[in-house]
Length: 305
Ligand code: NAP
Picture (cartoon, rainbow, N blue to C red):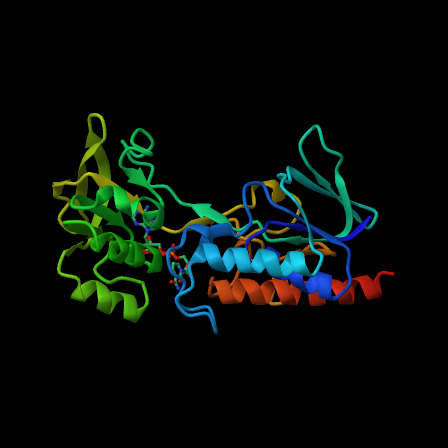
């Protein structure tokens, strides 16, 4: 019986592992793909305090090494289900593995990319459609790419692409971006980023790979077709909380309803990072959640000895 099952090995889960190890609590981090979470593919992280210009990969690596150095345990397996009975959580893994039993759970499974759900998006995935500019920008050197979205990710992606691309269309459904002021100012200064405002994407076309993106101007309803070899979708994230339906209270967008301490509607079940309801989803707030959850776990375990 563990003190904590930490589900998810991103910034929140790794920070929870560090704090759990330091608090001498027994814990295991369950991660299905690779530790590090969303930032693994981020080219440069410029707002993690004290570590300016660090690559997302290096930051993930440092977090994992730090946790390992303190004795944190990892299992590269997906959690399939969480069940709660008589004060014990059972985390069900694949059929071949025994479930993990723990007195508490810190759920830090993060979020995944939202899709556009337009014709061509699935068809050209990997041959022109991408969700990761840092991973795929190099394929578009000297060519044209379009980025969809108006948040921090979309504008960062447009800037990454603008270094190598001839032209970058930045397609946003409104007239104002929601990204931070510094990114907006850098985008405005980039001569090869062409804003396509008040437009929604309606179809991605091509034969062997992407050749066109058709967009609709929302106020007029008029459509136009842009010639582009790449479409980078950056329209936000969806929380990875499917397995929690009926287990714990979720909001209408699927985020776990949790406060600053990670406390949820289910005693002993805590949520950290991008999966929980919060005003600002950032690495630093994810890390803070991981620490706060372990503190809350310690108080819970003391009260339920
Ligand atoms: P986001 O802030 O939720 O922005 C998503 C963008 O996509 C919005 O502009 C939204 O339009 C647009 N959008 C949503 N659905 C759409 C659809 N179906 N069709 C067309 N456009 C659509 O997501 P994000 O940019 O991925 O950022 C997520 C979080 O990570 C944020 O908290 C952000 O600050 C953080 N982040 C930080 C950094 C950094 O360097 N510090 C980098 C990346 C992300 P509306 O504006 O109309 O809603």
